[in-house]
Length: 220
Image (cartoon, rainbow, N blue to C red; front, side, top):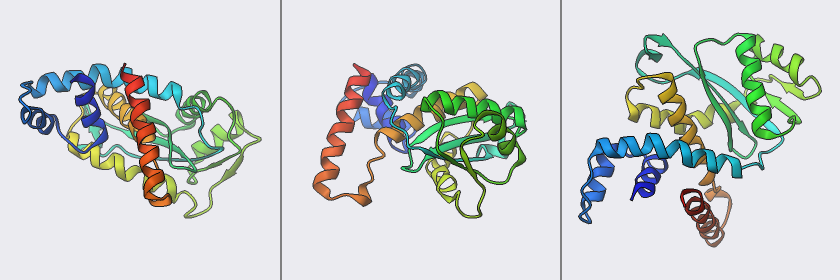
């Protein structure tokens, strides 16, 4: 029941109250507060397991940073930026909340990306923020760095799914809570990023079975 509740929370656009009502239909009585605590504790555990298994990121990273879409872009009274990187297949490599956009933060984010990827990507695509250039020159100078207009639309579009979830959460009480939620959501998004529009129905069903199997292994 715990793993099912966590799956519902991060896989679909459902609130804790929605999940409480869904569980009530077959006669399972549990409070939304209990569900919230399950998602906090076990969501982080499951996402770490899923991320350890997902090592086959592509060789091109699309990197973008935007305001975290919470009320007034504030968490604990401070403006937050959501740094995000996806590969050419749409898999989320990392998400990272910070209050600044300067070179030191960019370098720290790039180091996180290199740890996730295990090696340097062949190419990164970013906007023209100078911080990206600083991190590129100091950490991965051999990697191709493109700042062409519109080329980074892939990263910008990848934010849309997260935006919906952020609005559903209404407000994060802390940066740690927001980081934990966004990390778990990204891991679930990667697992079920099956390219439904690119494959036949039969292949999609096979991919879905494989994804569900991986999820069952992660929560076992």
